[in-house]
Image (cartoon, rainbow, N blue to C red; front, side, top):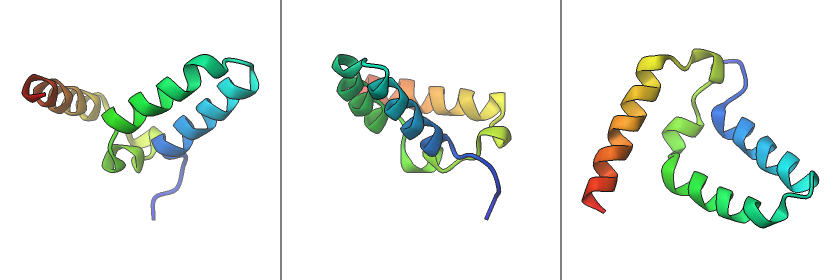
Length: 69
């Protein structure tokens, strides 16, 4: 198993910090957006191992999925 902070864990911590900071109005909407646009495969990726090509591939997939929706 790769070592390091996974994107999903970082995003979960970010949501918790936003809620703790009193930004409760936007937090639920952000959680829904993250769940919709960032799949389990991307959430499992280790942050330090993400490369520009990985982000581009994710954006490409997202743009084509949006076109279908």
